Length: 318
Image (cartoon, rainbow, N blue to C red; front, side, top):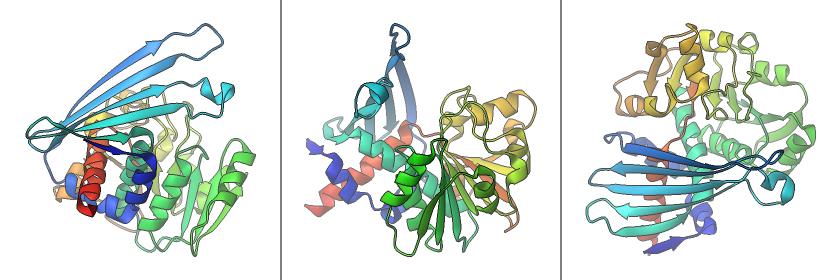
């Protein structure tokens, strides 16, 4: 069984190759999914700790299990990340363990690759301006992924609630032919963006539909619980809505579920997921003027796809 480190994941995961692989995997039958969440309640004011176990099985191909420890207190007690994870990949024909992969780095790349694939299929051609809302651990991966897939991007503007973090992120990134800067003006960042990527942990929408320009592509990553939303009802109403997977978003994440429950949209207004878009059974963008909204919900199937890509890349290089 192979042991694949974070450094190896970083070397292997070039976004054009990863996105192409994810597109091909989405042409296969969807994997079966099963999640389990364990919580350790901590005395106040300490936040609770969690263990997330996420399994996916692509029958006949591969199966995998990601275990993630989520310790929010690390933000204040140490410099350690909040999330630490490990992924185990098994052969789909024999059940033999194939590899253990650093799950934290795998998660970064599968999440950014998922969003970049959504952008490849739904964003207008020839866009030049991107806005990144949020400056957390996912932000540099999302910026790099979109810039490597949308190679006409020439300007990235970063907004974050804490201005210093946005400035530090802008200064840390060096992408050829791309100007990267921080801003304190959220409204202007949204209005000027042709591709808007948002990765915050807000429960109250911070992106207003009235700010969106015609032709914008919205890439929403941050919301992952039933209470969380990054955009308001007007943004939903103005957009053609797509998701990475119906199974992991509808009824699971507030970004989509709350507007359905309040009557702002219906389930049928989710026009397609990546399985449908990649297989050609549903259409994506219809015109340069429409606003497209892509909800990145994640899911164990994407962990499994990314693990298969990483494992195959290691095998092919030896």
